[in-house]
Image 1 (tube, rainbow, N blue to C red):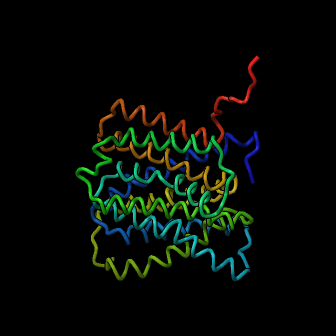
Image 2 (cartoon, one colour):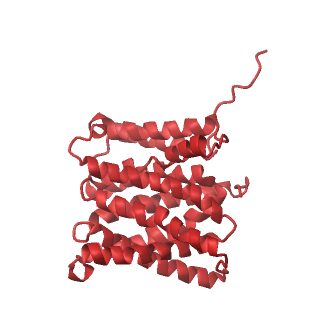
Image 3 (cartoon, rainbow, N blue to C red):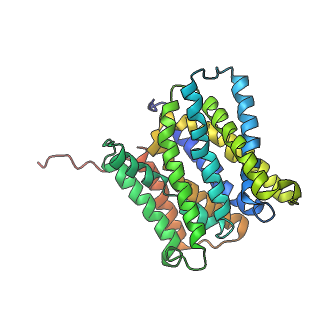
Length: 304
């Protein structure tokens, strides 16, 4: 399913909203991780998100799948899209700040393209897609700067964890194509529920959550992640996988990085530098090119 000219603006608007919701999660994780361990943060946001998504699916009157193979695929989607990357990001943010985490989490489009092109033999990506991806990635490089790229003052393991989450997001976007024949709220509700069930024993075993004393802001951050960055975001995500495709929807990771940096400026007092402005412009231009909202010059004209 591809967006028609009439609903292209709606799909792009949903992509921007999704990017904001996920970009804000980095700030919320930064608040929660001060007094709450990563596994418990992930289980909390997944439990809240799954409950809301199941309620949405029931109220929407969707029919749950009957195929055993479909039920077997949904837990895999939950792990790839939620349980694994959420845990890696939450753990990684113990060692690096939220802005850098958001910037490092911009590589899913590159992974999607590389996996699709070299492993799945998908040759549909053209000059427009490659140009947009490279432009967006260049914008991230401009924002990060040489010092950040060198990893100064940050944990290498934390950075690798965030990059691993990006790879998981990319595989999840490709894997999610198999659910394009069912309502997005159903896919979100089922995969999220399996992810929450998986993280419950992990949280109990690793964190002993009953012994924790999280602060009120940490609890509020986990609930906010569950409602906005998980439930609402996942319902939008699975819709966009059907309309924009895996490459298009993962391109939102560039905007996600932009929002994480902007929220860092507004809420954490980070400086607004000229390189940040240039980088953000490049990021949003890259997204617009990949999604087809910004057209490249046509060089296929003949000379008089």
